[in-house]
Image (cartoon, rainbow, N blue to C red):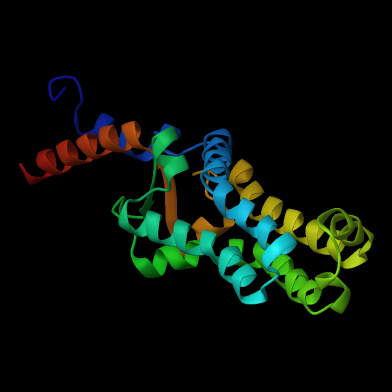
Amino acid sequence: MENILDDNSLKSKKETDYSLYASFGNRTAASILDMLVLIPIYILIGYNYQVWKILSVDILLNISPFFYKIIMEWKFGATVGKMAIKLRVVDYNLQKISLLSSSKRFSTYFFAYLPNIIFSYYLFNQEVFYTLSSEELDSLILTYDSYWINLTLSFVIWIGTCGVVLFSKKKQAAHDLIAKTYCVKLKELKNFKEVDLKLHHKNAN
């Protein structure tokens, strides 16, 4: 490879190879897989609504995805969904992100989850909530305007946050811009680092 690539071609590859960055489709697929991973949490949330009816348990279950995403991306550079799609979250130096950066990345998701947490708090403070069967409860929830408002807010915030990827040169979502991170393809990341190493080696010589 050193015989083929001179300094200029190495620099050109490093500066223009945007195949490094994960596409909107890649990231959506990873998010869907993460939703599947979290199915047990969603089942427990539903069970708590219908049987336990404990607000503290509901709050704990609703915030558990926060810790899943933050810890996984800090410790391993990826959630299970990203690992399956072979994606990694890195900082602007293409290194593992810190706990602070990982927390910042999730800040926008927190605001997407917040309406749901607020609605849960409202629901658990309704006396009728504790007297209804699961079928009656489902019907009641659908009659609340606040339920539909919160659902819409969550969807709009999520779309607004992730939709930025479609217009970003390096396919960054809003939370990437806030945390100064990239979501990249693992294979391309390895290739990119190899080119970067060769470039530094040539410059050193």
